[in-house]
Image (tube, rainbow, N blue to C red; front, side):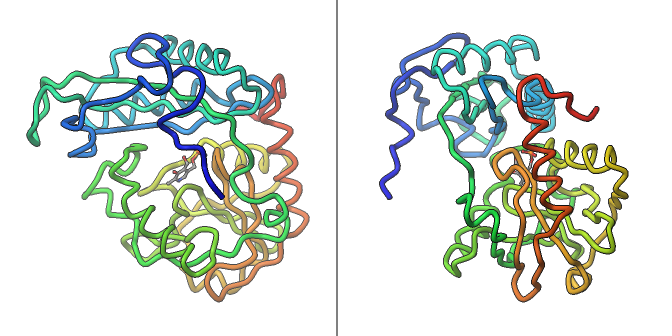
Length: 297
Ligand SMILES: Cc1ncc(COP(=O)(O)O)c(C=O)c1O
């Protein structure tokens, strides 16, 4: 399948304060963000013309930058407004929104105190992350060789470009084995998350999900936990060892892109997507609709 390249599409991108034609939204090859990964981003989704949990995404973007020791020169309100403006300009109802902030090219060295901070926001129409038929069957996942790092080695709570290096490696390895994605363990060998989504398990009517102490506590993850608790389902956030997966009945992943997607297998462990997963899939799809009364975050 030929994918329309991302550097030449119709419409505009918001870039450092205003809309510019899509193909003009470029940066210099000597940008610090490119060489040293001083770059943070968000992945948001609009449903029916409204960006789901925009405020939380923008707050996380600003916090990710702070964790990388830089300040985005726009307020939460200005960034929210820029996201809405770009979505309206592109004219999509159901879309993916990608704000990205990075250090510019004023300094070309590890230190970058005087580099300008840039912010761009691109919006494109985006179908379901995984093939819908495959979604109902449940995904086949690999077990990644790379592990989520010790929080003492990296700002693990930032949605920062550098943290995705091992995700790309793991995803490529998974796809080479005909898997949709890979489950990553953490530095201690505990179950952590997938390359772009959080993971949940169901056993004896209760939900179990890893404590997000060294990886992204996804906005979808928190939404799904609220939705489950609103139904009276017990949610255990705790350390999960991979050996425990043998006893888990259902498994699903969550993320802005993945939404709630059932999992059929992780390496040799198998699961049966069941009623509780289906219920949470439906609850989530209802919650993202404009005007829905989403469970309090
Ligand atoms: C590594 C990783 N974990 C988890 C998530 C899920 O986060 P969210 O639900 O906020 O999209 C994402 C997606 O942004 C991700 O990239």
